Length: 534
Image 1 (cartoon, rainbow, N blue to C red):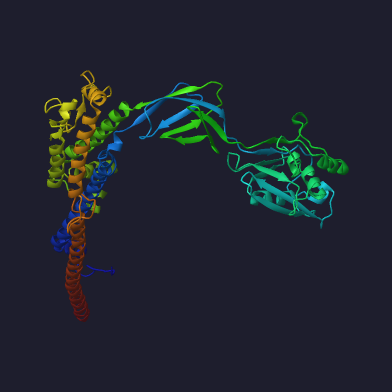
Image 2 (cartoon, rainbow, N blue to C red):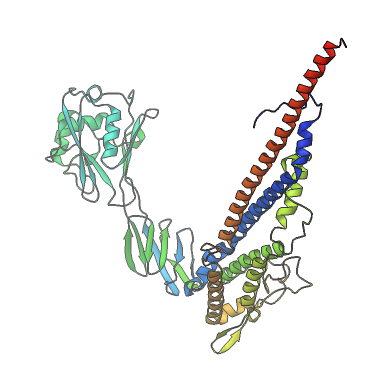
């Protein structure tokens, strides 16, 4: 903006005068800015409401159209400390027996306690081997695979840790406690491991045994010929004796500790099942073994009537929250006389006053909104409709679900539905619980009715949120049209700003010409006065 120096000769407050002269155009621009601001707030209000509409549409309504939402099962365990069980929809009703023979375990090798070893210690110093001497180790996994490890006397403890990790096990060296910790990455027999001193040809090498011993990792598994029960072969023992090595497995003396990985084993109805984890998926049941059991426990699977009730209650809660919000927005108090504030108007108010002023406007943006009214009426009409099940027409009231009535309902909650006997609803908790009774005695009727109801709601909302020239997909309001209006305001504001600037330039030019004329006149007057000696 150019710097203008005015009023030097006339003594007039030119800026104030011109400001008044262009005030009409400035007012037009401010009106457009306020309208655009109000529209942007309305767009935000619709975005918030639309997210709630879509939330109900895409979750609860979408799910409850299908029978799977109502065919719920539950399994009761006679001793929940032994196992936890989740029943799927395909689980068989009845009582079953379960015994936990064993839990899945991860393979662990806790090294013998060392002394004075650091991550930087070399194997040549620890095991007494040459720096260039090759050291062969092998990590064998329970699934039959193996990984060769090649070290040398110049390798450090940190190198050993890295190569063990690369071989497929967890490994670390705790300098504070002076121990190696090696473990399988998963539970189960197939993930177990054995750390041997074998070379690529399967021979147990002297250098490998020395290294394992110096790291506290020498166990009976270091030799390929060890028996399944852990007994050392005569050949292996002779090799150990020749090297002056012993298997340090005395826990009390800080020796190495080995826990072998194993699969979990359960007996379900007399049949044995194994798993690499403590989780079993059998005939619709998800069983998690928690501890071994000496005796059988019982699993009782039945229809989860409480689950069906909770599903319907959750649906009604979501529906009520939505329609109550729409009623609140539609019935909001008028904000007539309130418009978005200009910067100058905000300067004359406190922050709290500005906040209260704008809240008054924002709360009323969807007041008497035709789209809100249409959407609310559509949902209410469906919720009060009847649906035929087995030749009989049922309504929500048939299941003890009703609105409270015009004079009983709280403000903006007149379209909300309440379940008779719902312990969480103070308005109806003392009524007889007809819904639970019908779920127990006529579950097919309940399921069929609510499938039809939610399918009708879903279909109508699909139509209301379908894309067209005015709105995008999954929008219940004309977002495209609003965006076009917003952009149109932006163009109009830009044009009006140009008019204000042009008008200001015009008046400044006129006043500048006047100031120039006055300056010349003053100059001539001074000259004449000088000639006359005045």
